[in-house]
Image (cartoon, rainbow, N blue to C red):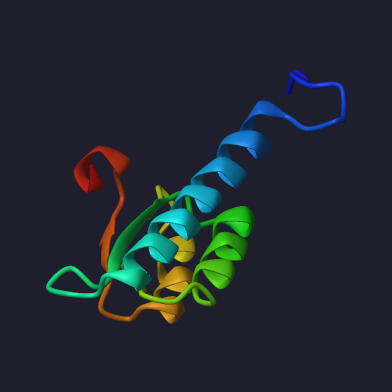
Length: 97
């Protein structure tokens, strides 16, 4: 994978960190004004090793709920269900979107 910055980060790593940061910001902003929409509902595309790490981090963010998991591999989907057993699973990311 091509390196897009001078510090060794790849574009994929940047996008993943930006997505998690966005979830944290959204969760923080909703914590001030809880109401009918008091939870940030999250769907993840790709539940392999890095996706699982992000799900573990998401579990520590208040007012978030994992509602959908998409991965082409059934084993990854099944393993990710341990974070939210009621989350919908999809084998095609387009169905999640």
